[in-house]
Image 1 (spheres, rainbow, N blue to C red):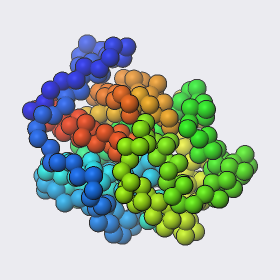
Image 2: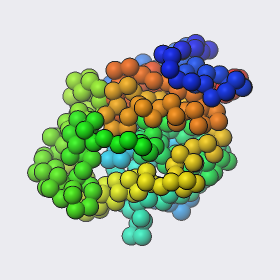
Image 3: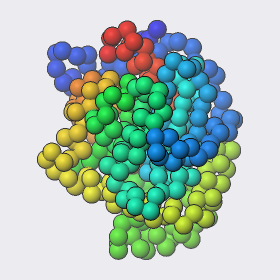
Length: 336
């Protein structure tokens, strides 16, 4: 069962042949209790479809598989709560993209969004699970868009949480710490990189949470400990910083594309039912891009969450889970 959520006026529907963008069904089906104390799901390196990635699997229903894709600088641990809440309806597979988390990149991997999408497509196809529910955040959302557009046979539904679509009016001053945006740019980022390198793992973790959460104080202390430990572990990996730097540059290059090569030109090619989720207080990818993203998706609808930052799946996991499950229920009933 689901109920409809009507969001504030100002987001125009794309046409009379589909529901308004802001009519998102929130499921009323009971969810499992949210357990903020649980550690990340078990992770291991897996070779699937000729691709070797570190993944975390969430045991769940065999009827469906959900693949979770993190953002720039994130990892498979970003999906602990959401994957657990959706487990009764779908088993979860959260990946570490090449160069992130604990997935070592191949020597020839170029860190472009296209390369990430191709790797993910090979992995998803290798799961042999039929079309999957694909969920991506930030850079992972952009990667998911590319995969869904190019391999519609692999995608059952698509959920995009603050996807990294281009901003025609970028402004680093919106970030809580512009050094995070500048650090990985060639030449100009050298000074910022030195400052970041001087930070300890816990200080880096705290900075990430300040950037990505509307209310950083809501992040549980034990999760901050986990994130600090993750930053500490990655500090010892020779490929971690180059992967971050090259992926950052690759995103910026993608944003500069025009015409048929632009990511905005790819979004309308996605045919899967798509839920777009955005936080009003997103300091990384502005909510100003939300309506356009949903409007360009042929089967897209938009959920804007107040008092929420860049990682809604972590800051508002219950609401996001209800929205995702509501989409699944609507699609099954042919109402999306």
